[in-house]
Length: 103
Image (cartoon, rainbow, N blue to C red; front, side, top):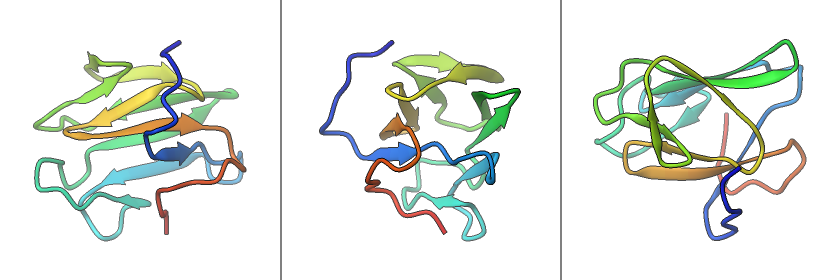
């Protein structure tokens, strides 16, 4: 697992009542990124069989987990660093105070 960096904004993984989290520039995304270097629908976080996965949606500037670019789908867990283009978050358990607003 990546070294925990508390200086990064946290992105809490939703509980099982919200098993899909869409991330991108579009205003209807669950997490809206306000950076032109991110794609309109950049990535999706999905809970499946009690594990979290990130799915890159063929973004232009890439999706990275712990500084490794992913192509397609990769398993993630709390503490991992998720980078979407130039924006980096630390994934956290639900209930951790978040610095990222979701709608």
